[in-house]
Length: 242
Length: 100
Image 1 (cartoon, rainbow over the protein chains, first blue to last red):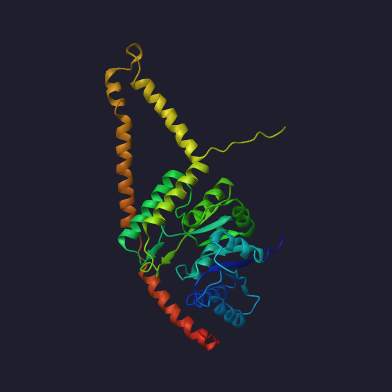
Image 2: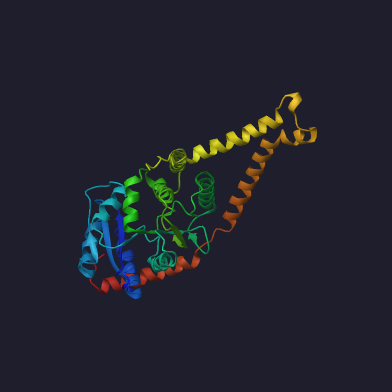
């Protein structure tokens, strides 16, 4: 019987103006991985943040080692999709985790993602705020209503087979993420939705793990009419083209 | 044997197909000429059916979204735990030489 393949996890962290949160999320990631014995690397893709994020990233690289913290910055804000592509070029892991760098996603869920992946041999494990004991902190009634309403509409129109389409806390097999990045063209929330929809089209399997989403920035950046309109446009585009 | 190219139907395509199918079945039965009409009670139920279904779907949607809104979990403990972790992280990073 062949020995199990060694597993390494690459975390892709696109950052823009995360000077305060980046060291905290990296500290939590390192602690989580060391406590659970998971081989890892963290790839920080900073898009030329004016607040000194890159300088903090360099300090973290000195503290934790350049084999664990990989800095792959870019000159200016170039978008999430290309950040993933750029990060993956340097990823040596066979699994990739994508997550937000603003502490809304807690690294403690990553071992649960891995456990779920092993359970069902899933190609993708998606964190969901809408099932089990998943949930949100820091949202008022209006925000929650928009979230549930949008998700309901998405379920009716796309029947995606996953409960949380706009979530961005996920584990992918590396080759699966590479394949999906080739095919996905949308931006923003819709980009995350398109990945799941295309994954289903290509026959990939998706497992779900309930997560808690702690929103500490909602007070500063309320969900406005513009974002809602662009979400609807993106949803209808996916409806008509997939 | 050469494999046949498969045109995957979009969701929109599926909806149009389903609507066309159900729509033509309804029209055939409900709007049939006098000679081919189904019995009167059936016709009376059939005619307003599309509107009934729409209203029923509307009610289902409101109820479902309402229920999901009411049962949307508030992660108080997660937020509190995060605050603790942030304190521990800042202290440890300072010890390791991080200059914030």
